Length: 145
Image (cartoon, rainbow, N blue to C red; front, side):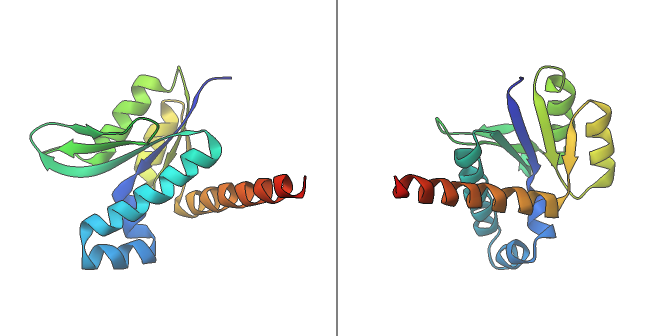
């Protein structure tokens, strides 16, 4: 079975989830940090590699990651997160099992044309909740031993 990846269009999620949108209205970095925390927890709970892509402003595409952490990309000036997501899917969908999380239907269609699976924002919310629930059940089960 190929290695699994979840690629998340960061700002699509931030502007699509009311609680993150409210944080963004106060301070952009706070909303990004909260999303990154949620996605890191998901990766830790599931073993699925997570990549989150944000629209950026720099001259080059930048990547931030820590050992064992999720990968975070910021697009460069003149490019969107959608462009980066689509390039990643086009390059790696034949080798890895990729799911893209975005509200953008055109981006979903493009990702699927390269062989990725797609979920909307509620699908992502459900996946995060299910991973958290599974971990809680596993902890409970182990405590009973």
